[in-house]
Amino acid sequence: MSQGPFLEAKNLRVGYGGRPVLEDFNVSLQYNEVLCLIGHNGAGKSTLLKALFGLVPLEQGAITLEGKSVERPDPRELSAAGIALVPEGRGVFPGLTVAEIMKLGFWANNIPVGEQSARLEWVMGVLPMIKRFYTQRAGTLSGGQQQMVSLGRALLSQPRCLLLDEPSIGLAPKLFQDLAGPIRALQQERKMSILIVEQNVREALKISDRVIVMKSGQLIREGSPEDFSNNTELMELY
Ligand SMILES: Nc1ncnc2c1ncn2[C@@H]1O[C@H](COP(=O)(O)OP(=O)(O)OP(=O)(O)O)[C@@H](O)[C@H]1O
Image (cartoon, rainbow, N blue to C red; front, side, top):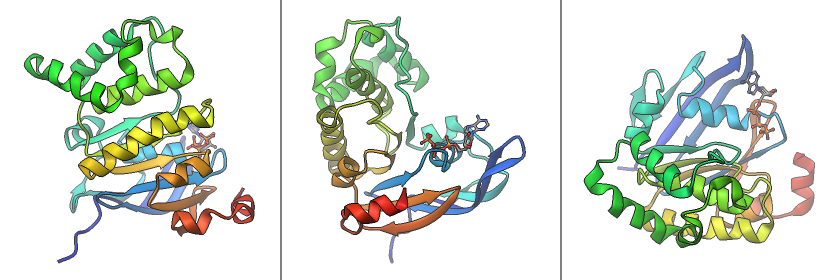
């Protein structure tokens, strides 16, 4: 028997103030897959991630998680089911040290006190660079370091699925590679499912298994990273 998708959304309609952003939108994320979502500004990429995580309500459509219908997507339930969202922007509190941000992460993820240090050690094993600036305030860190903290905090729950919204924003390609390398290694080791929204298509394709393209709330293309490696073709999509 073939295994169905890890996460599937069908006929989604999602919008703000009665104005739809996604309409009749379908997407599926397989087990053990990095799916790269690209599209121009305002296409609705962040809205899709938010809808999948229950941050914006579905006006229509259905979400299925591991074959089970999720009636009303809710961040608490989805996070308990193993999904973590890393929203666009670094999402760190500039006045808090990395250590304090991680403490908040323990609390937000309901991690029992007895498990916290082992969990932190595990995250540090994935993103060892965090150790170097662990006692610094997040506001004093570079963009790449902040992004790493944001990802590290999301990893505290040892998610099975990551929804990553533009992790490369404001990062030089080399810094994005520092972040993307460990993400891909972890994904392969733990067979995670990752939906990554990226503008830095060239770098993102290197760590992706499949690519989808959105335009004005619609899915307009799907293919393998090789299908999109051609510059001219990418230019046509933007
Ligand atoms: N909270 C909100 N309230 C009202 N409109 C919103 C809200 N968030 C997004 N929008 C609108 O929804 C549309 C899709 O935005 P969204 O952020 O999902 O696009 P995106 O593809 O992620 O774009 P970007 O690459 O710029 O982040 C845009 O027209 C945006 O202005």
